Amino acid sequence: MRIVVISDSHKAMGNLFDIIEMHKADADLFIFLGDMDDDFDSVIDVYPMLKYYRVAGNNDWYSSYPEEQLIECSGKRIFFAHGHTYRVKMGYENIIAKAKSVNADICLFGHTHVQYTNYDDGLYIMNPGSVRQYKYGMVDILDNGILLMPAEI
Image 1 (tube, one colour):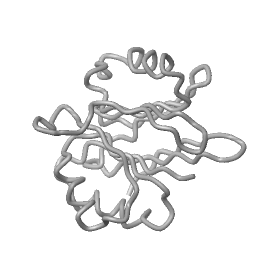
Image 2: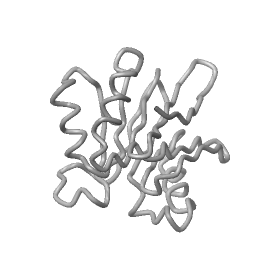
Image 3: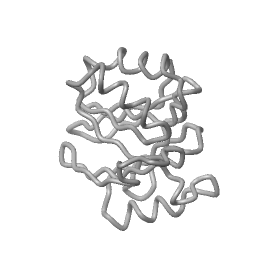
């Protein structure tokens, strides 16, 4: 299973649509980590067939989307949030602790605009960076493990 992870588009619609266009055929799922949910609304208007999950970011003031979610894909538990409620700009400890407390296998967050991948005691961790800065990420869940891939357009 391939998951394309995007965050912090901040009205960079061309970049956002470029990512969707590049991966609409090979991605099984898109996860949008917030900050400009109106941008992602436009994606869904153009590509209603996409399978996706999303959360609200700190700049999505009137969003009806949750601030965090826990889902299961291909037998793996994925916890994701924009990250601002866990103060990720001050460090990743809080969001990692939350992901571990819900027995997640994968933790995804944005907010810092800085790409980051790590593995910590059974937890795969990724910040895809900012779409505005041409950054995104991919998570491949394979029979023999999980692969985190930072990417850029």
